Length: 336
Image 1 (cartoon, rainbow, N blue to C red):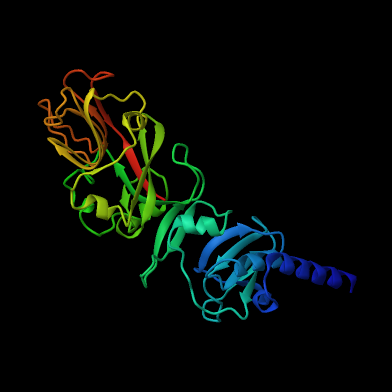
Image 2 (tube, rainbow, N blue to C red):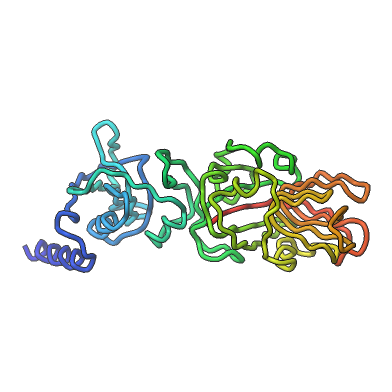
């Protein structure tokens, strides 16, 4: 009796602290049951009650799977569906709790950043995103932890490109269309396998995080740029200026090299050397017939060479600030 009273007191304390009504806090409990394929967020909780309260405070949450024993005890999975006999799975390590009194509307987050803003303890991984004005959801890889050089988590992965391959050269159709490429490799996260996800043409953003891995070292930088999607900035090949600066672009690859003049950066650069996104330099004030660059979606035809490098740093001819370079990199593009 005393233990029951303590539990009830704890319940009302948490309820009062959370600002929830009694109707919102009531959950139907099923022991040794688990609801699969419905998780929209994960966290850890000290009790079933704390896990349930997390659900009531999470937009779109209708139930939880709470792990009561075993590895990762205390795991709290927030679901956007309720359990039924057809989908229920028996699992002695879990307790299922379904919210009563909550509408069965499923409200999807619009971005990885929105997910993280709603719940600060999410891990890097795959989440379902549903953009505004869309009836469809799609899976994305969300990088929820800080990226050095880009900042706090909540980044949505858009593309991964191998500079030694021609998949994402300047003239590739993947820059121009709304078709994904190697989705499973994209959902695997920041691995060195090429991919283009639906976030390329669907996800709006205010910041872009760019990364390059060269010679075993990964470097990052950010661009402050707002757009409805990366597709809308790149597909039409129009030049759109960015303002990160020469030093920031060079920081993507240790020991990179550029010529001293021209110094044009942004989307859709085309002066003999072409880049979908990057930085262009020359040994003359004019940008025509430029010979050095750092960026993504490169097509290089200058100084009597045509290297098959589509992401990285190319610096040829004269007056380079760190010698001649032909450095292919593995590139990452994420948005925030």
